[in-house]
Picture 1 (cartoon, rainbow, N blue to C red):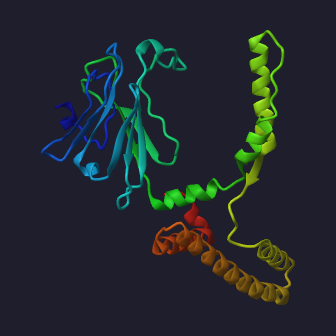
Picture 2 (picture 1 turned 30 degrees about the vertical axis):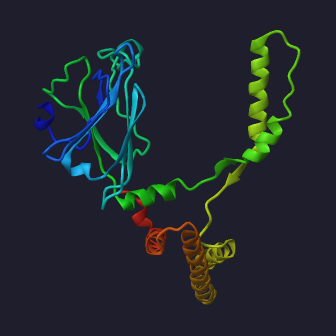
Picture 3 (picture 1 turned 180 degrees about the horizontal axis):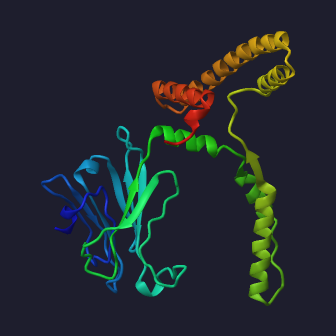
Length: 288
């Protein structure tokens, strides 16, 4: 009854204390998932999903008695989402104190891994939860343009680990005759850290433009700054030809990868075209 008083898509529930799982679909089209609690009657999480989002549900899984995971499929402008609902007893709640000391021990939180999606967070007033929890409401806005812009911002060196090499290096571990288990544990942790550091490498996303093309663009800028119009025109022509050739090769590579992975060629072609527009238009890199 309380949910009918507010606008919502998904609500996270905790402390429902059910012994058996429940999945119910109401006449209004809303769908409810409830997990189970432990033997002491502690925990259990669940989610009611509004009619507008119910068609996007992929699955709900209770990972533990205190953590639930709701997967939402991509549908139209709504991106694919993974929503976690987590519960901790009040005795283990996150200790927090406001700068003035007026508020302490806040126990309800919304955490996201994409900051550009979250636009507002607030407490819903006059909503009875039946416990010491309050109803927090987060507003999200996600567009394909913002997702693309975020991907361009995040393109940097990424650390990857060669797990085969790591396993080989870790196999060189030798037990010692130490009687102190703490020292032995510290030595093992240090050995594993060293193995991971030796097995890691840096991987960068493939460039759309080759280094030769980027060098031509740099030379064109230098010629333009020097006021050499003839050289600038010649370098501009070479840049156009080089960019066209690079994009042609990159497009063929993207389509080949999509075909090998069994993905849609049409979607791959569309995504590549949108990425090309994003790259050539600096203003489109900013999220809306």
